[in-house]
Image 1 (cartoon, rainbow, N blue to C red):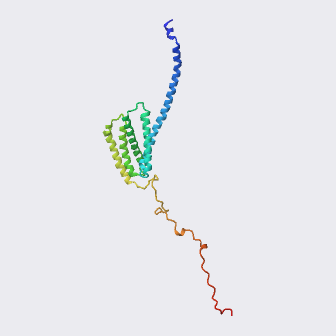
Image 2 (cartoon, rainbow, N blue to C red; image 1 turned 90 degrees about the vertical axis):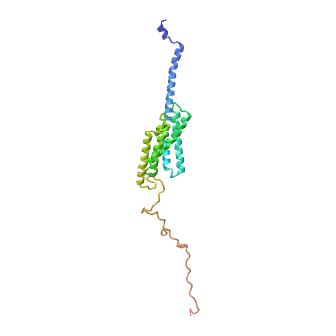
Image 3 (cartoon, one colour; image 1 turned 60 degrees about the vertical axis):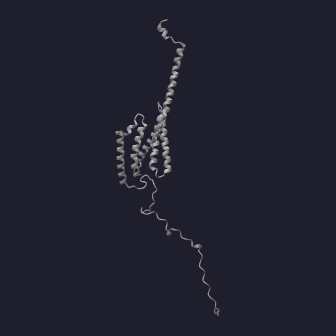
Length: 244
């Protein structure tokens, strides 16, 4: 038997291995497809969680003076949603999970980042409703979000906060504060603004005085049918001289 024939000979073990190979390949492909589908759903939830959490926090930060108890709860819910998205994206979907110290740093900086984004977006969105508050929230959100992002990013040294970029961010925040404060001072600070916040006093049709209460003339007329009738006049006095 030639070497070519020897090379072309298939032993029973080789035939069994070749028959199992396509089956194993299909199972691996199905497992990979299922993993990609789960990964897509997880990435979607993590992506949406960032925005939903930041949105809840932004609304709570701006409207907090109106109802402190209610908007404190909303801010807490937003922080929990944002942190859940952070854990999902940073620890569950990543191939290299960081150690406990780095995990605590990421969680803390993510919480700070969520409030920074919330202050920035909420201050901009509701500036017409709360000009003085928005003039503080916007620059504060710029500074807080920048610091939190630098701390959260593993590839960026923390000292970059005090770099030229950090000085630029601080300058922009200062200019935004003074500029927005001037804008807020020039705006008509109507309670509630155009967003419907606050209880506006109901005015009469002339828009200058509260609606008048019903006057006495508008009260229903009293029923005189049940009033006591005056006594009838006395009969004429008979002195004994009549009838003669």
